[in-house]
Length: 126
Image (tube, rainbow, N blue to C red; front, side):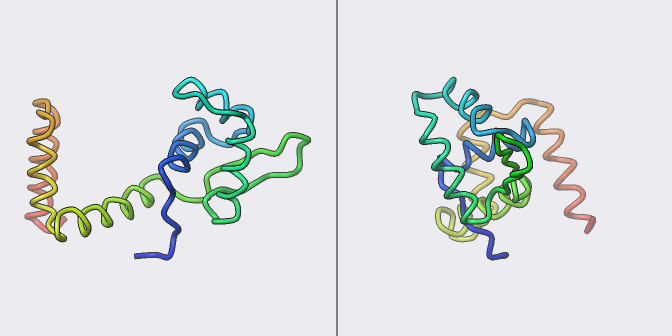
């Protein structure tokens, strides 16, 4: 596992905006997040400043309004968070995680087909 810092829930919300929108100003991130919940502009600004210090985002200062972008990849972040979850909540067992996930929400036929393909690939060593 890398030494990538683990984002908090609030930081993950900001990262999701940056991953979907790409590089964005504080105002643009704020406008997306305030649709989900009530928060202030300065809260988003402070979160981005903290995330910059943690290495989760990068800042382009070449324009009047600073533009932030994710410094971490979405898939890599998801993998690290999932590894933590599997260890902490499921005793390191991927089977227990999948069993709980499949029982918690009924998967669609398409999801089951994709899961079967993934299992077949894992069995064949791909």
